[in-house]
Image 1: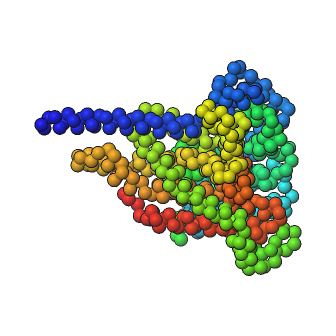
Image 2: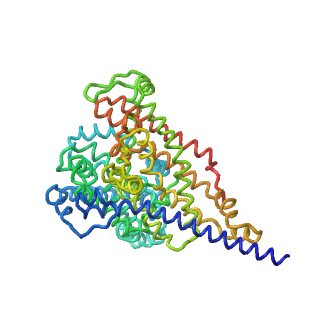
Amino acid sequence: MASGGVVENDVAHRTRKIVFGVLTYAVLLFVFVVSAFPILWVAMSAFKDNAAILTSPFALPNQLNFDAFVEVFTQYSFQIFTVNSLFVAGFATIISLVIYAMGAYVIAKYNFPGKNLLYILFTLTLLVPPHTKAQPIFSLILDLGIYDTKLALVFVYISFGMAISMFILRSTFTSIPKEFSEAAAIEGAGFFRIFWTIHMPLARTGMATAGTMMFLAHWNEFFYALLLTTSPAHRTLPLALAFFTEAFSYDYTQMFAALTVVVIPGILIYVFAQEQIQTSFASSGVKG
Amino acid sequence: MKLDRISQKSLPWVYLFILPSVLVFLIFYLVPIVTVFATSLTHWDGYNAPVFEGLQNYGRLFTRDSFLISLRNLLWWSVIAATLHVGFGVLIAFLFYRRSTGWRAVRAAFMIPNVISAAALAMIYRFLFNNDFGLLNGFIRIFAPNFSVNWLFQSPYAFWAVTLTWLFYAVIVTLIVHAELMSIPTELHEAAHIDGASEFQIAARIDLPLCRYSIGTSVILAITSRIAMYEAVALTTRGGPGDDTMNIPIILVNSITDLNYGFANAAAVVMFLLGILTLLLVNWLFKMNKRGF
């Protein structure tokens, strides 16, 4: 009786385990499909002609025809938009890194009046939805006479990374033992030398993480690019994509090619900096 | 504050180093926020000086149909975000925690919608839901060849179509909750095992309550993302059909374009206050000021 019960329990236990395993994989498969399949479909469709896109949405393309990509670049100036995006995201990221590395460094390593208040204010900026400041920033850019320039975007994007950079870089600098700077001070190194030759090389990982997060956010930004530019000469990729799909909605292949071109760099950045991006998402919950 | 010797000597340097950050904060956060609050009480077209008119912009907001519909949409989207969206993210975090084979690949794929541009994701969904060449209708037509619905442009489907553009993309929830799960001391699980608790009991009775803090954070992030949701609407339905998918950022941008700055900033203040309200409410509901361990 007793042993029968154990066997029965064992069977029930094993069945439950199998059912649970199957369910687990069903859910994980669903996550994979819902996350990756739309993008695979877009990339796949960029190699098909209009007829194939309409009649067989699920079929693999018959051939690897890169014509649509070539046309998107050569005929519709996507090379200009790509360069614009690189310029804006690149410069905004570099300038932000300099500004926030300096700020985070003194907050982490020195005592001065108002230090804690400043750190709290800087990180609280995370809670300000970017759209709420749209009018004042729009007016500021007009007043500065830089409306419809790439400079306007660089200028505005610098402010985006404040909270996350302060968060990442302060903890980076805090983790560098103070014996290093004490030893250097005894040897006669001044403030700037201690910062530049001792702390900056040791803060490389944190700088890379903060830089990646900011670059990704700048690269993907749409709202302020739309608000602060009008001419195609200063368009960034996400904005160009929106205009392109409005104007050429009849040429499906090229729309899919344009979309693929805009999406791929973000994915590449993620592939190369997977760990950093995951960790910073997890620790601060900021969307790139 | 007492300063040590090294700090005292380098104080000018310290101020020089903190100055750029302070300037960014002043120019891009403090001054704009003060401007938004102050001018939300004025009639202002951007050319003439703002004229104080009290709470009239707020009166106009709360009597405008599109704004009331926006609030209703936001309420529904927030409820869906706080329950289904966060629930889905938490479920995946628990599945990842069990280290099933292939979980890393799934995590990598799960990240994709969050590392690409929100504008591009909105476009992808516009294509997916397209009636002519969209993936969804292509799939449905395998079974019903004459099926035809314009998901994003027909009532009542548009609201749910916009909801689907973000509903399952809960990777941030998953990452935050997973990080907190990993920090739960294993002794707790061992003790529960010895006491005869099943895997499911351990997950539901021990792990889930201990993840309260990260789940609360996730709810806050999920709802504030809905308050600020712009691309997912602007690049798909633009608030339509009618006002079916209208939301506050769309109203705000339209008012700026109409040179109705005071009104736009009143909408911005409402967004701001709703965010703070969410923060306080969720903090209180999840008792987030007290850590579980």
